[in-house]
Image 1 (cartoon, rainbow, N blue to C red):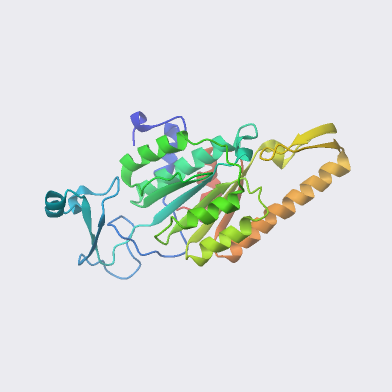
Image 2: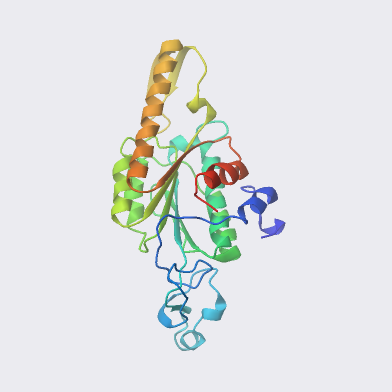
Length: 295
């Protein structure tokens, strides 16, 4: 990837860090296209296995030109014992994601773009789904061309969803036909999140949750009479923020975040809490690498 393919989501320094990494799921998933991620079994067979529809970024060397000439449909050949990793980027587009400074919406876009770059580097397939009203997803994308398309798609997202993210996750699960790695990028402000994650787990996906909160949400650090407005419902409530109130807030937030983390880990997945002000290189080069998410 060069500077001409970059968008405001990532700069060249981020890309240089990301292109040295690859995703490290705990499970092994059977792939449908030839990639750089080979199956764990000893040896790799080049025996023909099946056909499937062409996806953006696929290696044209595996295109069946006879089928294309006869039917006008691009079809690629797949091979036995070869494996790519289906990666689903599930991006929370709730109204609450438009909150914060820096905004949480911008943070999840950047992180999703970064996951796309890392997956592309390993030859994995990426499908991005917006957790918002209506179906908005990409096709499976591969390679550098697919990454550029992913960037454009992410930039077009609007953080204006009204329904809870748990509802949209359940809808997204119906679109995820291939078992793979489900990366959920959300602020986690939904008490029903655990139930929808259970549905992804039941479908056989490995679940990674990246919870993104703004610095103010993580630690308000202010006192006085405040009027709080729910970003999604518009409901307002008057509170007096003082020492005990802030202490209780931090306690409740920690318990809520811990419940998400415990659920994800019970399902055999990974969880990380990230501030919306954290840089992409910091998150991937330090937090994710130290946590075994990437190598």
